Length: 633
Image (cartoon, rainbow, N blue to C red):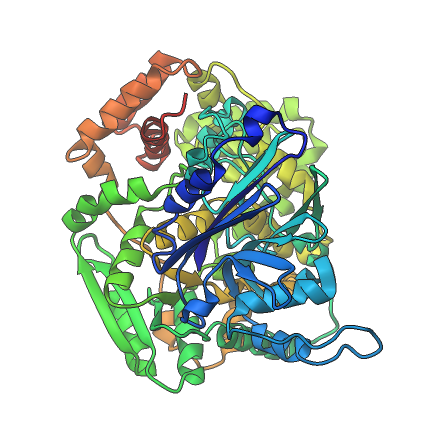
C-alpha cells in the first residue's frame, strides 16, 4: 500500500505554465504522502508527465520493487497503490506465450505485483482491468504513444482524486497532495455543502473542493493528445437481478467457497500481518477462516473500552481462544481516546462525520508491529446486516399508501411527527410525504442527518445533492432481489463515501494496510444474485451464518450487535466544549449558513434536544476545523 501522485502538462499550455519548476512540485506532492509510504520515495518525469510514489513495502520488500517502475522493455512506467491478489496466477500466464498471437513471454525483474500490472497492460491494454482481483489505484504512462492510463478498483477501496482543465491533469491518493501542487485553488465546493450537511460526506465524483473530483470505482481514464476520456469497466448494478438456479444448500456452499477464497487471496504478504477482531460475526468469520488457511498462529487485535454498559472484548476473546490466535487486547480509556482525537482530525484528508475510531484502532495495531490487517468491513452491506435492510423491506410492504396522493398523506404524517418529536419522527414524516412511498425515495431519507426543514433553516443556499443522482443510476431490482438493491445502494453511497474513505485515510495515516475480503468482487457478484428468501427469511445475515456452518460459536452468532460506546455527548459538553464552540462560532460566520440557526443548533444540543444528538452536530465541527486547517476559502 502506498501513495501516488502525478500530473501532465498540456502541450498547448501557455509558456508561463510550461516553464515552471515542476520537479519540485512533484517532490512536494510526494512529501505530503510520506505517512502512506514511509519506506521509499521517488519521482520520474518525461514528455511533461510527472509521476511520484511513496512506498509502503508489503510484497517483495527489495529496492528493485521501488516505484516509479519501468516495464522490462522500458516503454511503460507505473505508480501503483494497492494489492493485486491474483498476481501470481497472472504472472504465470504472462510468462507463457499467448497462443495464436504474437505476444511473447514477459521476463520479470521483480517478485512484486506492481510489475504484473505493468506486464498485463503491455499484453492486454485496458482489458487488463477485467483480469485483476484486488484493491488499487494506479497510473501508467506509455512513453511511445504518450498515453497516460489511470484506473481505480471495482469497489473503490483505494482512492484517486484528480483535477483537470485545458492546461493540465493532476491526480493523487489524497486531496492534500493535490493542494500542495499549487495547481488547484483552495476553494470550497459550495454546490456540495448541503450534501455534506445532510449526509456527513460528499459523494463521489464530487468532493468538498470546487475543482477536485474522485475517479469513480470501476472506472479508468485515458489522457491522450491532451484530451481526457473516462470510462466504466465494471458495474456492481449489473448483478443485482441476475438470478441463479442453485438451491439453498448449494447457495451456502458457493458462498462459503467464495469467502474462503477471498480470505486466502488476502494472506499474501512479506510483512507481519493480522486481523481486527471485534468479536462480531464479520470479523470473527474472517479470523476463523484465516486460522484454517494459515500455517502459523493468526495475530488478532481488539481495542476495547471499559466505559459503558457494553464490552465486546469478551466475545473477541472467545473467538481468539476457539481459533488459538495470538490475541492482543488493547485497552483504552476514554481519556486515551480523547488524547488522540487531535491526531485523528489531522489525519482527515477529506472531512467526514466518522473516522476517529478507525484511527485509534489502526494506530494501536501498527504500534504492535503489524503492517497489514484484515477487516470485516463490508459484511453488513453484502449480507443485509444493518437495520436499514429491515426498514426498507417494511417500506416496500407499504406500497398501498401510494393509493393516496401525497397531499392527503400529509395530515396523518403531521400527526405522527407531532407525537414523535425525534429524528425518527421527522424521517417518517418525510417518507410519507414523498410523491411515491418506496425504497428509492425512502433510502436517502434514512441516511440523512438533518431533515429538509432543518437544512432550509441552516443553509442560505441549497443545491441538488449528488446522492440523488447516484441513486438514479442504481437500477431497481425485481421483487425477489430487494435486499440486493439495498446492498447496491449501501455499497455505492454510504460504504464507498464514508466507510472505505475513512478506513483508507485513517489506516494509511499510520502506514497500516487494511484488506477487506467481504468486498472481493467475485463474492459480491454472486451474493447480489441471491434471492431475498435465502438472505433474510427471519434474521439478518442468515446466508452468511449458515454458509459458515459450525465455524462460529452460538454466543457470537446470536449476540446483540454492538459497537464503541464512547461518551461523545459528555465530551462535547465538557472536555471538548471549547473546541466545539469555537468551531461552531467560526462556521456560523461563513456566508453559506444562517448564523442564528447554526448557533441555535448548538444551544439545542447543549439543552439535550432529542433531535440534535452529538452525531448530528459533530460533522459540522469537523468541517469547520478542516476548512480552517487547510485554508479553504
